[in-house]
Length: 475
Ligand code: BGC
Image (tube, rainbow, N blue to C red; front, side, top):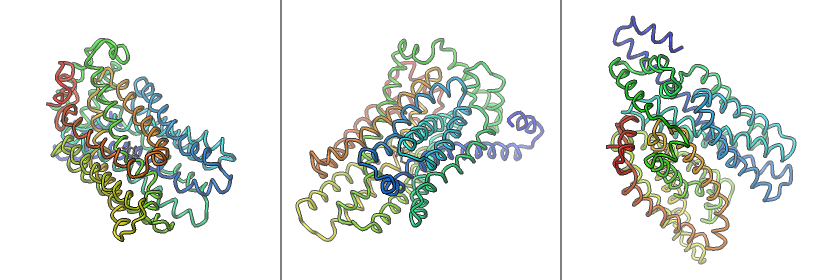
């Protein structure tokens, strides 16, 4: 495909070249976005299916937890596996393996004949989610022009949120007939579309160059830029970055600057998860019922509204990250989340002490929404953007594997500890605790997080390796 594009472009007018570049970029961004959609679909689908599965197989609470958390465990393992795949076979083939596992996992879990089989296929789906969450942002960061890299990766996160909302709507549609198997199987359709599209993707020029396939790397770069000069300059910068002799773990051990980048990635993903967003997502029916909205209909409406808020607020990030930057988005987002967690905690405190003030349930539900909006416009997309930008090329796979695994491990810890925290500390104190964490994250952002808007990956790497402070590596 790329060969054809490059040959064709030799004879094209400027206008036609522009159009060809736009077309190939759009195809790349939509295909990687599909991986985000599947991530969201698989994350969202189980909440609607679980009550029916539990009823049919009489599942204990422990088995229900296994059905839910097997995917997260699989995702942590999938992130590690993806590091191996993407370093050795390339980002494109890594996405292909992920798409294939999405199909097998969706069909297998929908056709499972017992709970062990379901848990096994959910683990497999988790591996697919881990591969997608690792590879898609990385691939996008390596393919996007520096001026719109933030927007493109936010677009990927937007698709994750669209996936969560679509899963909920499809679950609702199938819930009238109670057919949980259809809820799970239907996801194989977008997975099939993904596999067909990935076949036509070009490989990342950075990965190709790292494997010594310089001609192919150059060709891909030419197809991604209207200006030959810009493509050539990028090609020179990539080759410069590849002069580093060591790679991966060896480079991590030998080089303090690489360790700093890995530390930053791990910290960013831990921050993203410890904002507490997933608690609001996973337990939104429980939060709504604590706030006094206990009918199934109320909770369904609440969950759809939360999903819509998530999608809409992500558009703020899409628009903001390349203009105002990553850091302002993060600071505003953590601030909004801190305020909403504190007020939500206060409302729950009032409710727990038996007071019935009419507006408290509405205020609690609004605070849950505000918290979602705060995350969607900041840490949701920005953390994935930064994690794909800050790792040096020679240790990029290793660094992103560490940060993506941190995301999934933290996500599991938070999901597993929420109910215990509520039982021991009470729900209000639990939310205040998350509020305090969000305040701490504002300071961590000010002192450690770099602003990377409009800076090439190679420039970020040069600054890091020169020993610049982490917060200055994007200058
Ligand atoms: C986070 C997930 C979260 C999802 C929601 C992602 O960026 O890593 O933990 O559930 O956003 O859209």
